[in-house]
Length: 277
Image (cartoon, rainbow, N blue to C red):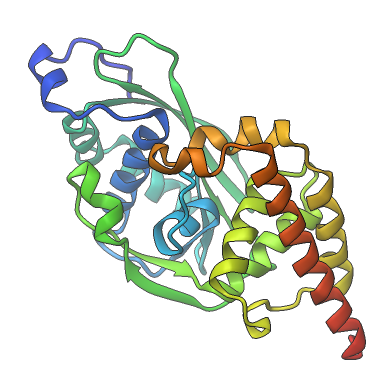
């Protein structure tokens, strides 16, 4: 377990660039991936918000890091990730980046391995920044993945190397986001935000892989039910400050909801007309 260290030399405070909370979390995620992928990259696939941010140009920083496990036992995953989180390499990198960490392991099952991390910026006496790393063996909506380096535009602000990471492509990303919106026990505004981006980037119907008209219709209904207050509290704090004004208004959120709901309804109609089994 890494203990929050507030005794770092004051000089470091002036060498480390100031970051927003979301950027501090992203910096840690990238450092973790850098160490994790140093030896091999063939046993996990990046998904969710980090995948959207790194490889689809999303302006939304991801608060958590979600990955699917490929053909590995849960105990092996736990040991591997523990070695990274407790190891000297990551400790040195986060320290050089002006970050201190504290790690707990609240959920370790055969299907889900989860680590919660509290982050602190050097010299910052404010609240700790919570983030989560989760590896899942549940790949109901998995599929083909792509091996790519995280783009330089993402890592450059932190002065880091580009991790080489397997991640899901657009068809699987769309499928997973629809499933999350339709099936998650609690609706999340971030799923609508991500689907709206995917709808703009990939307008072709072939890009929107079907998961079932019932799920598509349910996702559309849930998209319309998420209020602006949820968007404001869940999404806006993680938007790139340079473009925040473009996303801040309630009208913008209503437009996003309508765009996603319409696209999902169109998908459901097309699947019905096509004789979905």
